[in-house]
Picture (spheres, rainbow, N blue to C red):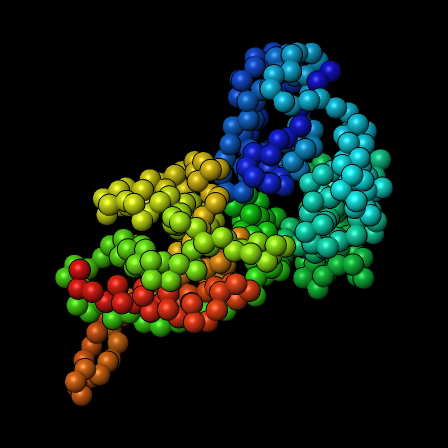
Length: 403
């Protein structure tokens, strides 16, 4: 029997949610035939069959969250294609323990899937203190989340089920381990509301924002751009992108990646801009590549394509990573100023608030001018206040040009 385990569908993705199975037990599948659609961090991906054979077991159903490296589907026979080796749970854990021992980790003696081990290292959680809920006490990704009270751990504590269908209500019942939010949810009555486990886009957002909170000592500077003399109204995104290009040329430090381990930063020689797109399913942040090389028409087309893909939930995984700078035009909805959060390894994000008329003094007289409020957040580990203010000043200077 061959076991196919969920591969890393991006760069270091720790898990995926099953959206829909395209095969069922008893089906004979061919190599490269679509088996299942899964949702990773903000993208829905079809996983093809690496083996040819008859399906014997499907691990999980729609809505279940599967850690990277965990069993996904089993076949009674077939030929392995590519580099997706089959292994039993015990062999898989043994390999994980050997890898941990070679890296010198003290937690290498514990039984944990690699995704759980990696998350525990990131959150500085001692695996020896966690009671695994997997087979034979195997520590899963959700076990680490629950122990650290991160993201879905709080909603799981209200009696929701994890990817294997096991109830996590006992975790919330332990007052010493549960967070105040988990205890409040567990104590709520049926008439108080509905428990909704964070999934897909919202789960990815929770993890990304937790990472930002834990790693980035952020700071924010705010100011306004007077756009009263624009010859053409609208096209805020294009003008903001043009202004960010001008600011990058004036102050390159904010278009960078920061490595906290090496305490070094890479000043990137191009701009891959992540743009926040609000969708009914949650926030998706696709990337428009090399914006400094594109014409206004190319930028407009690139923005439109990424927005369409985001609303169709068809954004490709490669279009969600490796951004060098971030932009949130939240003012199209509401809000004047904000504190946008930087997502590492990037070091800066610009937020644009709602354009409105303000009373300003011009040559001693009060006039009504249209102004755009701006909020620039930056990683204060590697960006100085002076660099941030120079960048923001250059953004404002370009935005205040008539055309």
